[in-house]
Image (cartoon, rainbow, N blue to C red; front, side):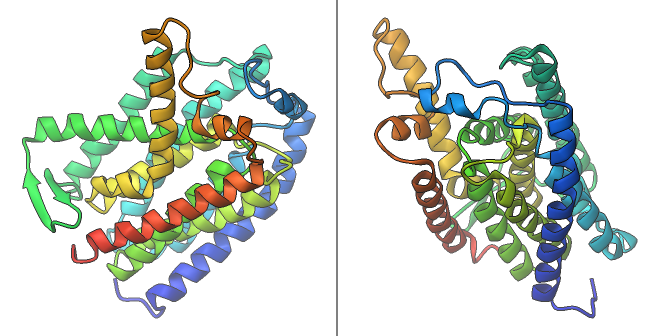
Length: 334
């Protein structure tokens, strides 16, 4: 696309607009959530000091979902007029997951418990959204069945049916991994902010203007949401926000046709998920013993003496280092 703006100016404007819209939308959203008494129910088995968070407004992810959506539609309009819709497809997939999360959150709020949709219901809805996205991307010619291997700079072509099964597994897995990471104030927000900065920079370098606008708007939106979500949080993003973020991260991995890049940029999400798998497996194998003090990993570290601010800084720093490593692994892709 020919533009009077440089890619970096587009990125900065998208980030600024995403921040401004999300921050401004956040005030009335937070007010409305308080009026609706949409307070978070805290897990009884969680850290005891989390009990004080009970009643904090949840579903705050609505702030950046709306803010980013408006930024993407407005700033990406020129790309859409020229037939480029990748940013819109990525946003719509994330929105599908956000709606699933909203239904889950709403049921929790109405029933005043920490359980919403059943695991089976969420899995089937998430899988359906992932399959629709993948089929759309394939129909548009934006998705290939050549799996790019970072660092080796080679692609392995695999049968479409196997690729689609792999892709569906990755998307659903990534979405739920981000959801697990959202367990303390600002953690999922800050980690995903770093991931979005990575995608904004790399897609700008690779001349994927539409995707760089989406990624930058997401980074700006998350920076604004952090103003409400940092410790002590004024609101939580809820499943509404965390499933949306998971969908956005996973969709970007496939939109740039390099899903294995998610292994690096999503290292914290993976660690959190593995800690849960290890905990459950070890508990069953040893008939009641625990490998970690508590899972996911951030709760284990909390019980080991880490405060929430330290967790946010360290996990974000690890993500930034792994994003740099990811770039080194794919810089020769385009």
